[in-house]
Image (tube, rainbow over the protein chains, first blue to last red):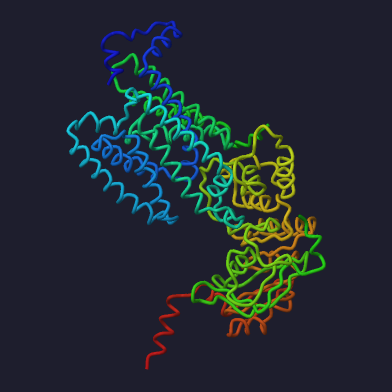
Length: 298
Length: 284
């Protein structure tokens, strides 16, 4: 809510001198923290999001964020940094999902059941804590302007682990995501990779909740990757585009939010939504006017 | 890794081999040698255990009893000298993945980490291009997989299996879901690729006829038994009747095509109706 106060106090005045504007923004510590944490989260979410789309695990991502809600709320009750609660619950949830195995139908049912239970648990924790609404609000919808310097350090550490994990399992994860059966025959540890990916997804969710909250998590974890998915078919290029889109949405949303007394999460999710809508419309038109989309790449 | 060092010995040796899952034996008493360069069609009704045989060669399934050797050693899971194309499944039409990237996975997809972008990828790219060219898929290999026909995707999967330069190629129903003309082209393509690369091929199919110009040997799996030999010695009423344990007829038309008639349709597609009849007959 600090940003809202700045906007309302009239200290934030937009001029057309963008450098001066940026300098003014970055003179606040909470804005520096927000830009930094937002950047780390965008990079992690952009990379992990590519595999979320490729592996069709959007539901698992959705569920993990709700599991994280219970964790964050529980941490608030215990007066612990909510990021730790998020981290523990997201990793625990990911491990359980991994143990449930590959049968999507059964897994989705169980995930749905656990998800509902975790939300209920989160409500209890929030009620146990007297500060009720603001804490719940910031967990559900994100509070990027409330990120402390300590949170930034933690976010950088978690983000580094997530990116390193994806880097280490990049090729076999791609193989297992595209064709599990052939990957198994080539002795790719498909099952272990599936669990490792869910754990990495847990890390990504834990850091992303700080920025956009439990309910808006898809705007960073799915939308940028979906934009990339429509723009390119090369894995490395798609990951790069996904990161750039996530980063652009987060930073622009943050900058806009600095001048208006509306939630930053709203601007981030709106920018992501419009990025997707514009991409979808323009690629749709391009594909229709050029039905044989045989573009041999250089 | 070429097939040449193995030329003097059989590529696959099975002796009294039996296969099964859990308490169930699928087939048993299989004894055969597959010579280097042989093109083997594995035939038989659905559920008879044709893919099970491939799983044993791949080292994904332990023999229930008996022995099997592949390329001079016990089956080794992940053996890079084996190229494998599983049964085609329907692929999501929206999947944003190019044919060349699919082929590339056959080269280094099993390795951890990522291909370092700061090192030249020329050797790998050339290998991918060669594999794509050898299956005649150059024109569409850069398209997304979802935008391809079943036959085009099948060719890229074949290229993926070939890109690692294997000695033994295992293909599970590569002709399924193709129309008659594409079946013939695909069979011819696999045959010519196998000849050019001196490959030994094990190909699961349920129809012998599109393959009759390329295969040397038939491995017929039915009724828990396995028969092995040249097509005109195995696909006969005598051998097949013995395999099925019931009378089977083989019709040979003027062009030498063989048609198995009799019990196979029922074994392949058991009618619930037929079971009801059988049950009612058993009543006193």
